Amino acid sequence: MTIAQNPVAREGQHPMALRSGKGKLFVISGRCGRMANRMVLFAHFIALAEEQGHRVANPTFHSYAGFFAATREDIYCRYPRATRRSWWDILPGVGSAIRGTRIFFHLARVFGLWNERYPVFGKTIFTLRQTPGQPVTALDGPEVQARIRDARIVFVNGWNFRAPALVQRHAEKIRPYFRPIAEFEQASCQAVRRLRQQADVVVGVHIRRGDYRTFREGVYFYPVARYATWMRELAEQFPGRRVAFFVCSDEPREATEFSGLTVVPGAGSAVADLDALSRCDYILAPVGTFSMWASFYGNKPLFSLRARDARIVRSEFRVSDLREVP
Image (cartoon, rainbow, N blue to C red):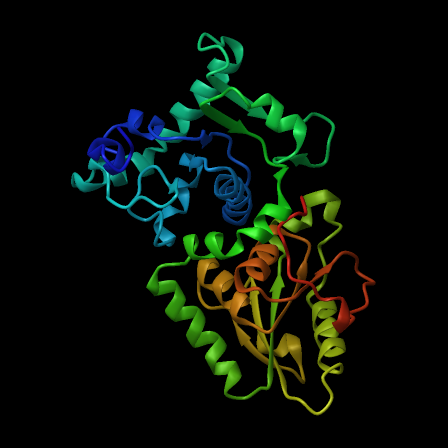
């Protein structure tokens, strides 16, 4: 019986239903930072699933599932997207309780660790970790493919899994999956629309301060005045055109910090800011998955600020394929 013929498997009425069908089931069981990090990792496994006919369930995404149309009402956060809701989501209060307690994530994490230590299921169930000592673990490379070859279920614990060529190939499948719910789309559209009424070119700027004070010993922590200088440098590279800036930050910002520039502040939330960045013509930001995702999702060129003395060159903006591991 196929998934299409089996209503229990199709509706996801029981966790074991996730095992049905051809290909492997990847269960992402290790958390890797905050929202953008988890979206980037998720995207690479979606790309692999599209390429090889697998499926993905991501209980680590529960913290952010409510922000996106595809995961809002799917307790398993599955790819391919579920065609019908599971009973966990239909029963009043059950889905929200599961998401709130993160119980599925805790179960997946514990089972993945337990299976790694006591592989009583042989090669059928495998716990995949990133390659030690390597900055990137090639998800579609021969080493990983050999390790998971005989598995039906793969528990994933690691952050640096990447398959950028597959992400590029299946970008038009990945992007719709992460479409924000209407509330955030409306806020982001409104913020960018305000700028387009008074500019020919709209540049999204992400000023990340909070955790970047200490991340990698503060290498990407820049003064706000430095961002303003970079913005002026970029504006000068559009002679005869009006340039305006959508500026989002993890701290409150004042227009007076950007004297002489046309600026609109953030859209009111991290998700709306992320979506708004993706709607700009160019993106300027320190190295990080937040701006990488905005570039990929909107198919917009990004310039990653890697040092305080970086020089902005318009020709060096590139659309991200999510390959970098910040």
